[in-house]
Structures are given as structure tokens and as C-alpha cells.
Image 1 (cartoon, one colour):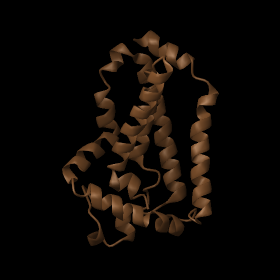
Image 2 (spheres, helix red, strand yellow):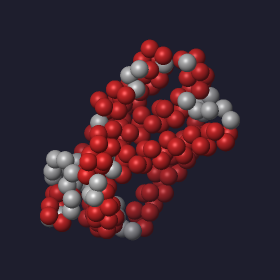
Image 3 (cartoon, helix red, strand yellow):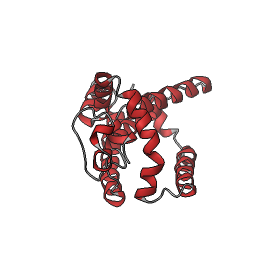
Image 4 (cartoon, one colour):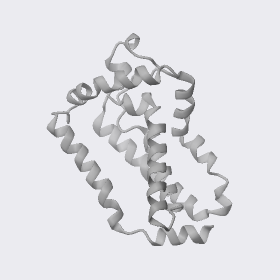
Length: 192
């Protein structure tokens, strides 16, 4: 299994970064066009989305809470611990990717300083699942970064060879990441 993973990693090339860089650039352009590159502008652009998602997901608090726990690095990575023996190359990538994303998340949280909803809105106006977090460290979401770092590594680690299987694998991983990230209202949706 480790040989297959090494072969998958050896096929990676810089062109794979074009789409993520394009998406990040598109997000910045979108936020700029809506005058949302400031904290106040960002809060306003996300306010309606936050309340809608909070209302929908708040109807299933136990499901939301349990799915959110996958964003905790200790929980998510413990599910993958069986691969330490069978795929040490994957674990090398997971450890390095987790350290880099942790450092990047910390630096970006210090730069942006975006308040959490409990710091901005009346706590009775939305559903809080779990602890009430009212700091100014919601962007970027640590849980979402953990989820997408791990899923990106899994995406490239087990990438199929056939094109139609690659496309299905890509959409499965991205959909899984979005589901876990969107259930985390205290980290991604309410990063306003």
C-alpha cells in the first residue's frame, strides 16, 4: 500500500495548484467587489447566510455536534491511525500538513481577528451548539482547516488512475469536507 501512495505522490505536479489558487483569488475578488474585505463588511455579507444555515442545522443539534467533532485533529486523525503501519508515507504527509496548516491558521487568525457570532450578535438570536465562543479568532476555521488538510492528503494518497474514477473521488472528498465544515457553525459559518 505504501508503494502505491509513493507512486501517487510522485505524480503530483505544480499544475494541481492552479485550481485552488484560482478559487482563492475568486473569493478575494468577490469579497472586494462586495466591499467585504473589512471585518464590518465581512460580517454584513455573511449575516444572512449565517442565520439561515444556523436555523437549518440547529434543528439537528446532536448530529451537528457529532459531525463537528471530526474537525478536531485528535478525533479525525485517530480514525486514520490504522494507516500508520500500512501507509507511513501518508502519515508523513498528514503530520507535516497538519503542522503547516496549524501554523498558517494561527497566523491568519492573528491577522484577521474576525469575531465569532456570539461576540457580535445577541446570543438569543441564533442556536448555539456546544460551548459559546465569543472571541475574535473565527477566521480561518481551525476545524475546517483540519478537515480539508486531512481530506486533501487522502485525496492525493488514494487517487485512482482512471479519469472517471478520479472525478468521482474528487467530488466525494470535497462533498465530505463541505458537509463536515458546514456543520461546524462555531467555526466556519459563523466565522463572522
